[in-house]
Image (tube, rainbow, N blue to C red):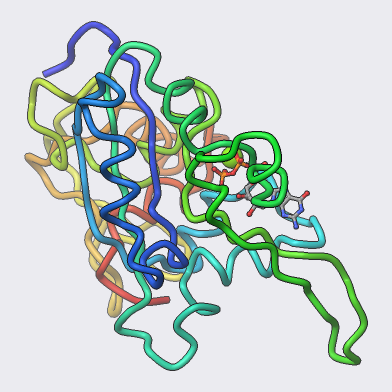
Length: 245
Ligand code: GTP
Ligand code: MG
């Protein structure tokens, strides 16, 4: 079921927040009492490289990108404990959701957050120097505890990247959906298949409710036409908690 557009935003409670037992603090800062916003979706996710790279696609090529990917995957905070590598993904809905939550998070850089917005969530974060193999400074990493969508269109892309329609109560799905009537869509090694291949994963089966925009991408690919988004941006959410990598 699709309803009139309601503003919503994606929040990720990042591995450093989980490691430092700040989850309860973060959730209480974002509570309906403080923000007037409601939970629509929630999941605990082991972040695969494919999901991390899609989430932070806009930063590909930047000097801090490799460490950003390792950070969100939990590789840096739990190097020896793969079973603890996870984040909490949340969707909040309500008026002015994007801006309200960005304000509570505060500036990206925890040093700046402490100076300019004492009391914001990211004021509790840290900045970690990055070194190359020879030990030279090559920049820094911002461990800032929380992600929040920066704009409406970003929120839509991110929510569809992390959540399937079935992750939401029917009245809280605010993007267009479609029911897949006939086809099976399988995924393996970043390729799409319409029949089962050994080692492939079935992403979507007949009867499944799918984001319409994802369906458009799959149909274009199936027909050999240019698609509006990469296959990984559709497949990644179906593989959440299926594989670690
Ligand atoms: P997110 O909510 O995590 O998306 O942060 P943001 O929207 O405040 O910032 P942005 O999307 O620009 O960057 C995503 C993440 O990349 C940040 O949370 C930082 O960890 C990291 N990052 C962004 N800009 C820089 C930078 O200039 N230097 C470094 N070292 N890290 C950065
Ligand atoms: Mg951002």
